[in-house]
Image 1 (cartoon, chains in turn cyan, red):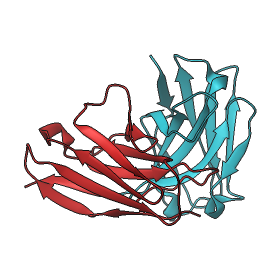
Image 2 (cartoon, chains in turn orange, brown):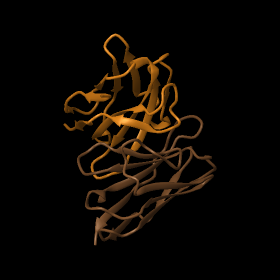
Image 3 (cartoon, one colour):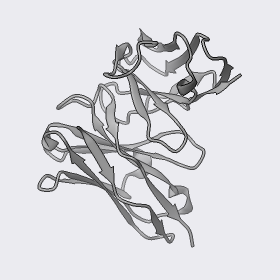
Image 4 (cartoon, chains in turn green, brown):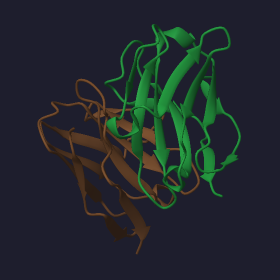
Length: 122
Length: 108
């Protein structure tokens, strides 16, 4: 079955970087795009950006431009999200999610990874 | 960016009730509207895509409607496992694909 498994929880100091992985299985990796979404404690869902696993095209949320990078490794069917210059405002659960339909991202995202808690604290 | 609003922000209902949640976009998004259910400590789950298409495996008591700027999610007969937070998300044209603020459905 289609499954996304994310890397484990991280604790980082302010100013550091974090890289979250999302390993996919059960389908042809390059046929789908990935969205990345985060959720601060007790808050709603925040769109971070998107990457095509087909050609590596990306689109990032404006508020994260310059701090976020999304990549894929087709040899291991893994998507990555790196966030730099962390502050306490970046403390959140980070989710990867696959586009529902091949070569499209306009019909929602499913499935989702289990989430990765990133805590930024001095 | 397209802004999304939801109403109500929370509601209390009983098992068996019909529940309706509304989502509004700041500009027309055609039918590019998706609904997710999230339970505490869990990842969101896609319920409805393209405004009214039921995702595989989702019970038929869930339905979606609307187009343009106004959309609704309806649960025809609320079940105990439906108590959760519901989010709408627009996926019109190009990203950012913004989410609504969420509607928490609680037990009356």
